[in-house]
Length: 258
Image 1 (cartoon, rainbow, N blue to C red):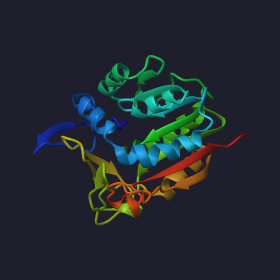
Image 2: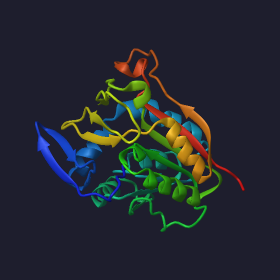
Image 3: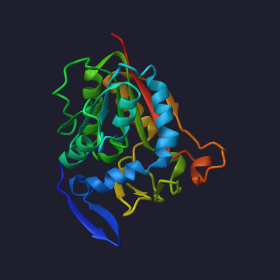
Image 4: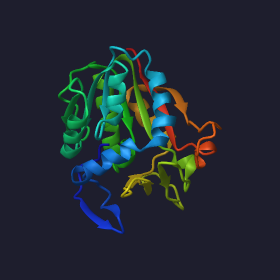
């Protein structure tokens, strides 16, 4: 998970919750708790990861970058499937935990937001990013990230974006997290997601519509290939709103061949 680093931050604890003020979160103090929350994120693991990996097939031998990798949970999934994985994040604490909990074949690096200069052009077959762009208040920074990801992707490579699905699931509760109701969803407004981990982590994010993300991606040179909004199957599992409201959306962007 990667957060825009242009503002000051203040972290405080209250009633066992982790609150982030001024919209920016420094994960270094809570990297261990975040890693635990990721391990318990069943909604994403069971509904999101299978969709993402489906669009990455064939995975074996592919070079994949996880932008905003956090503590490396999805990197480890991809590594186990035979990919050559690199993860980047702006939090040194998150990267430290990722290195300690991941196989040695995965490369982890700390970066500044939107700066992929350590990689050359067309370095990766695919790039993935889970719940990262929603944490960035600046559309200019989001556009910069799209452009950098486009640069490091090979021709016809894909960028898979995952974000909470506020347009469809505002105020809904899922097994792993809930989206607190926002009365007026407007571009750039503050929205709040809360994990079900112990202690819960509150994310102060920023709403952008799926259309906005597609437009910014298009301006960077991508075309939208697929939009998926996965629902939970009626399989007897103890799902909550996942059966009727999609917790997140998954967009597959394709780098246009020149």
